[in-house]
Image (cartoon, rainbow, N blue to C red):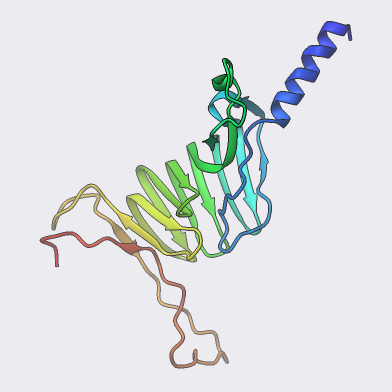
Length: 208
């Protein structure tokens, strides 16, 4: 390897190492551990405080993971402590602001699996909004479909809506729910306990 190639390689590795990182991301309920990201390629845009992971990207935290063809992480831009002529060329990047996932998006937790076309994670309110031609959420054998699902990754609360509304309209929010099977010899759940809830469907005006 000649000196020029070595210098170029070193600069590339340094740029990747200094790329904005997904600090404060919480894709797992009560997740405070590190986010482990893998992909075929990482490109850092320091001027934009952006890190782009392309090719089978996957973010794993605790027992939850987010997968997509591409993930873009955007960190917050902070005031440059050393303003000058080139201040905009190297901004100071703070904590994670948002993350955008595109293409074959899956959000998987021990409780549910969600599939869509596009997802946006916002760090300030720890929510994932997943959209697509059809968003499918499964929990055990239960299935809920729609076009937009909002998940609070801290509480696990989820709301599914669909752009198509009105009685008789095709493609509205749909749930297929199975009763819990009682195994022989199993005891009945204690009074006051509830099984995990499926995603809620948003109420629409004019609908029962």
